[in-house]
Image (cartoon, rainbow, N blue to C red; front, side, top):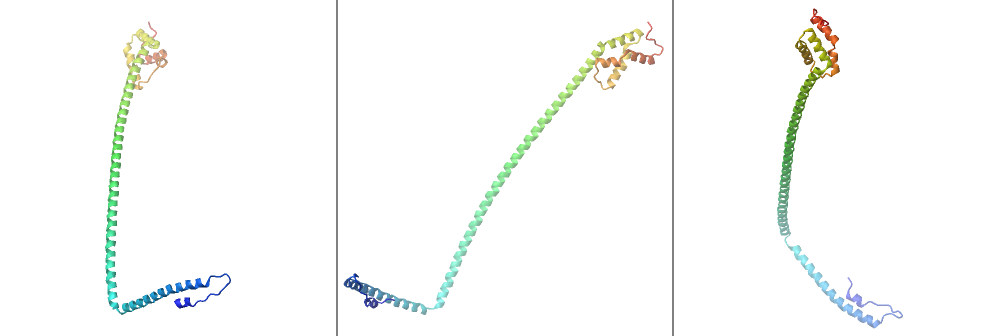
Length: 229
């Protein structure tokens, strides 16, 4: 460490146009005085520090170790308390979050179930409506078919009555003395046995051709002559 005397005994080389020697000496003297004061204070503090170190070194080290152990135990206990509190807080927060998630899942499941039940009810209602509509449609079609079939039967009978062939057959039968009802009954049975098929006037003419009828009558009435007056 630099001593005050070292500063006091320093010499500077004289140069041309250098600093004023008197001013430099005065300034150095001032610095030496202040530095001397600081130097003495530093020495005093150093001596006091050494004395304190000696006193601390002479104390019972066992007491220090005991105090350190006690302090360590207290610190560990405090840390355990803090850790336990933090753990409880985390568990409580997790439980609250889990309850919230369970509640949301339950509400969502209830909404989905209600929506599914609503959809099922609508589907069942639509199915009943469709079945009823199909039933009504089928009944309407069936009724129309029955009416159409009855109408066709009446129309066929009317057409048959009005055809020339039927008139000729009746005229022939009447001329031979055969009752018309005896011929009408086989015709009606034949028509019904064929599924009540629709016949046009041309079909009726073909079926009731006089020549064919004449042959049929020949088998049924061998002794009957259709040409006799």
